[in-house]
Amino acid sequence: MSSLLEAVKKGKTLVSDGAWGTFLHKLGLQPGECPELWNLTHRAEVFSIAKSYIDAGADMILTNSFGGNPFKLEHFGLKDKSFELNKAAAEISREAAGDNHFVLGSIGPTGAILMMGQISEQELYDGFAIQSEALKQGGADAICVETMSAIDEAVIAVRAAISTGLEVVCTFTFEKTISGEYRTMMGVSPKEMVIAVKDAGASIIGSNCGNGFEQMIDIIHEIRSVDSEIPILIHANAGKPDYVDGKTVFPETPHQMAAITPALIKAGANIIGGCCGTTPEHIKALVNAVRIE
Amino acid sequence: MNEALITQIGICIEKGKVNKASPYPGDMIGQEGSDELTRQALSEGIGPDLILQACNSGMQRIGERFSRNEVFVPELLMAAKSMNAVMAHLKPYFQTGTVKAKGKFVIGTVAGDLHDIGKNLVSMVVEGNGWEVIDLGVDVKTAKFVDSVKANPGCIVGLSALLTTTMANMAKTVQEIKNQFPDTVVIVGGAPLSTKAAEQMKADGYASDPQGAVAFLNKVSRN
Image 1 (cartoon, chains in turn purple, brown):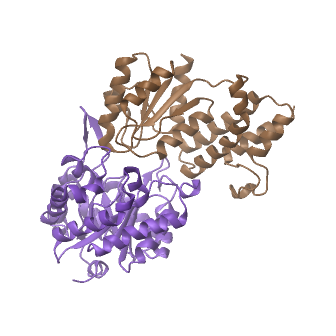
Image 2 (cartoon, rainbow over the protein chains, first blue to last red):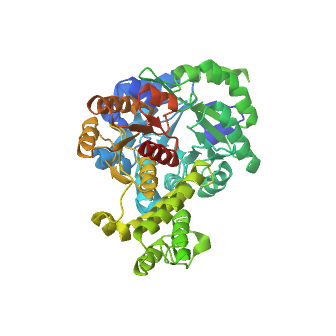
Image 3 (cartoon, helix red, strand yellow):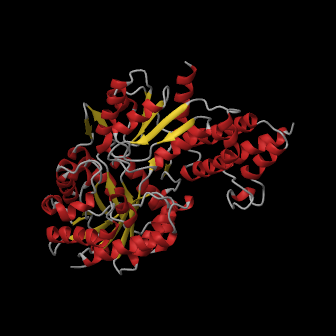
C-alpha cells in the first residue's frame, strides 16, 4: 500500500472515521474512567468501534489513544503503562483496518500549559515521543496530532512524531470569534497554524472538533489563502451539543453532513471525517457523498 | 498620595506585567511590575484597599477584552499571574481583616472530568475581582461540593465541565446541592454548556466566559 500522503496526492477525496470518545461512552465507558485503559480491559469494544468505521467505508481510522500521553495517564496512575496502552491502541485499529486501510495514531494535547510552567518542553517531547513510537510499533501508518490549540505544544508533538519516521498529520481546534475570525483558545489563527506546523514537519494539516462542517469551510478557506498545496484533513463535530432531558444530543444528522460535503471538497478538503457526536452512519453518508463527487 | 503608582499597578494587572525580570509583555520589558510596585505602594503608606481596587479594575478590563475575543487564554493567564504577585503582598491584610473579600466562591470541575484550564481561568478572574475563591480542583465528587457548601455558609458555587459526557454528573451535583441547601446559588460553565443546558439542570446561572461569571457573582451579591 502507498503512503497516506501518496494516496491523497492521487487526487481522490479520502474519508476518515468518526467519533471515538462519545462512542466509547455509549458502550459503557464511565465518566472519569481512563479511555485508553480500555485497550487492555475492553479490547472487543474498542475493536468494534474501529471495525464499524471500516465497515462504514472509511479509508482510514484513528486509534483509541487521544489521551495516551504520560502526563494525562498519570491522573489515572497509569503513567508506567503509556507505551503498552498506545501500542495496544494501534494494534486494535490495525487489526480492524487490515492491509488496505490506513491507521492514524491519535495524539491529543496534554492539557498542561507550557507558558505557565506546568510542564517543561523536554517532558512534553519525551511524552509525545513515547506515544508516537508505541503507536508506530503497534502498526500505525501515520501519526495524527489533533485538537491542538497552542503552537508550542503542537510543534513539539509534531517533532516527536516525525522522529519515528512516520508521516504526520496535525489539526487544531478553532472557535469563531465575535468579529467572525477563527482562533484557538490560545489565540492562534488558521494561518499561524499552517506556518508553524508545516515548518515543524507536518505533511497534512487541518482542523478537528469545535465546529460542524459549515464553519470548517471558512477554516479551509483561510488555510488555502496561505497554502494552496498542503493536503487538508477535516474532522468536524455533528454540530454543537445540546443537553436535553439528561442526555447530550448532537444536532447534525448524517444527511446534513453529507449535503455539505461537496462544498467542503470544493473549498479544498482532501480528507474528511467526523469528530464528537459523529457515528458510523455519518461516515457512511460521507462515503456516499464523496463517491458521487 | 501617589495616584500614578496605583494606576500603574492596575495597568500591570491588565497587561500581565509580573515583575521587572519578566519578558512579558514585550512593550514593558525592563519596567517594574505589579510585584515591585505593590511593595513600593505599601511602603509609601498607600492603603491595601486602594491597591486592590486598582487591581480589580485592571482584571476587569482584561476580562472584558477576553469576552470580546480581543485577547485569549495566554493574556488572561499572565494577568492572573500578575494579580497573584499582588495578592502575595496583600495576604496579611486579608488575614487581619483590613481588607475584605466580596464573598466566597467555591469552584470545581465535576466528577469524571479532569479538565482544569477553564475552571482555573474563572477562578483567577473571580479572585482578581475581589472574591475569596475556594478551588476544589478537578474530578470533584458531589459530596465534596456539599461538604464545602456546609463549611462555607453563604458561598456561591461554580461547576465546570468540558466533556459532554460529564454534564450528567454536573446536573446531579446541582440537584444535590439544591436539595440540601435550597438557598445556595449555583452557576455552571464549560464548553458543552449553554443557557438552555443550565436551565435544564436548574442551575441559577450560566456564564460563557470568566467575566460573565464575575458579572453574575456581583449581581447576586448585590441582591
